[in-house]
Amino acid sequence: MANVLVVGPHPDDQELGMGGTIAKLAAQGHNVLLLDITNGEPTPFGDPVTRKAEAADAAKVLAPEGSPPIKRLMLGIKNREVMHTIENRHKVAAVIRAHQADMIFTPFFEDAHPDHIAVTRIVEDARFDAKLTKLDLPDPVDEWTGEPMPIGEPKYAKWFFYYYATHLRWVANPNFIIDVTGYEQTKIDSINAYHTQFVLPEKNRRVVDWVKASLTYIGSRIGTESGEGFYTREPIGLTGLDSLA
Image 1: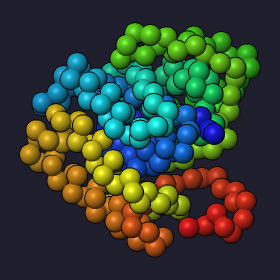
Image 2 (image 1 turned 135 degrees about the vertical axis):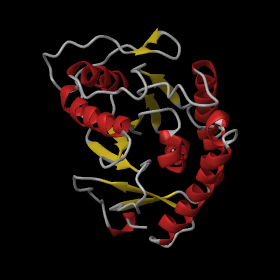
Image 3 (image 1 turned 90 degrees about the vertical axis):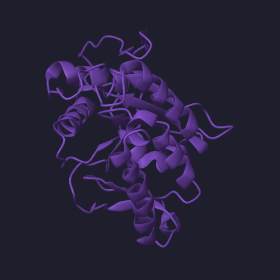
Image 4 (image 1 turned 60 degrees about the vertical axis):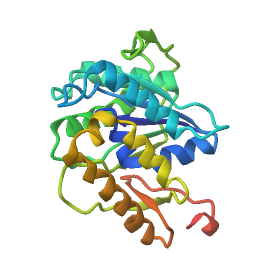
């Protein structure tokens, strides 16, 4: 089983971009940690306390009965002011070490939201920083709870993938797709757990509709009912042709 780290600039990005895959990985027994860079606030209907509860509810939705619980950690960097700095790189690197991440997912590197662009740059560089043997990093602290997460040994995540939660009006260009048939409603329920973001704001209710449409369209590209697309800059190794969908 792999230690999987899914990074979101704001709580709900992970669910929007790859909620079906998160649920599938959890059901398969993988150790999944959702890292929220910011708390996502302020928003028109939200507040930090409510967003914290919504994020916790979404993580519970994504963990099917009988699977390990999905952990969540928030760094507390200020929303809408995320900067690609050494300090922020090291904060994320500390989480990579603490989780001993084998696999990292982060938003696609082209986006209209400055936070998304900055977070992806931070995570790309933090992957490198996390392996440095003489880099002293403090234990990461979960700003949701105030609790520290004990740091581990230097670690270089073998796999690094990009998911799509973009604010650009464009069609995604995945170079691999994960079949998430059977996890569609779990993904939708995890998104709707953010009541202040996708239920109360009338204009945002449409987001759920296009997420459903995207699941169907992306899945159709590999001949399945539903799919989520991903991008990688590094080759993926197959053990044989039976690994192909």
